[in-house]
Length: 315
Image 1 (cartoon, one colour):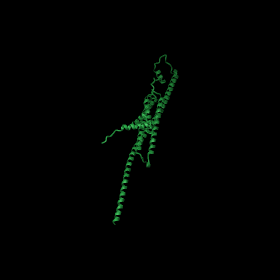
Image 2: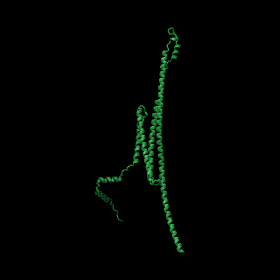
Image 3: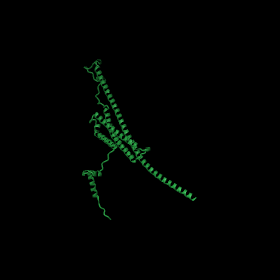
Image 4: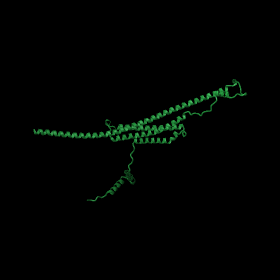
């Protein structure tokens, strides 16, 4: 048996000579060999880039809420204008993330419509799997956004409750009872009359008592007006808070409904993929049956022809 000679080194020398003749120096050859070993990462698609950007925006929103959580809840750390500014920025963040998710859903719908072939049947099962994966990505992004908005709803509810508590009129401390004209008359009657103090009742002047009663009435009216204005302001604030909370809850509900719809679409996409696979199997079996039936028909015709020829020759 002939010995096998190892020609690996000769092959390497031949490759190096060919590379030098083509203008490849040592650096270029090293870079080329490294590219064979370590492959360059594949370029990300537009959908992947948009999804990662949306995920980054949701993470930025969550970090923003964690950073300004105490500032938004504690009324002694920031003013109402600063808290309104925080709420406005959060609303802008949520709106931008929702728009990005809507763009992703639109791109999935367009791709799903373009992937359908004749009679609305998907020709490529790999493309169907990709669409199902994209539906799952959008579902995860919607759930993350809903989780962050739920956290902000809790913070907003705490702020609204504090605002309602501060708007409610507080009870003022009880004042010392002011003596009215009746009390003064009773005190005067209860005093024992002395010789120096005994006077005719007609000599008592009622003017100071009337002035005091008028002052008390004016103060009571002022307090009533102040309390009425505070109560109206509290009711107005409470109404606005309830409306804002209802709107925010409505937005969160819509986001959750969209997440449920995306999950339903994802399930449908997976089921459609299974149906396509089953359809391909059925088509393969039908093709095999058709070919076998053609073979049987040809064989039957050949046998029939030979039988007729034999009967004709025999007769």
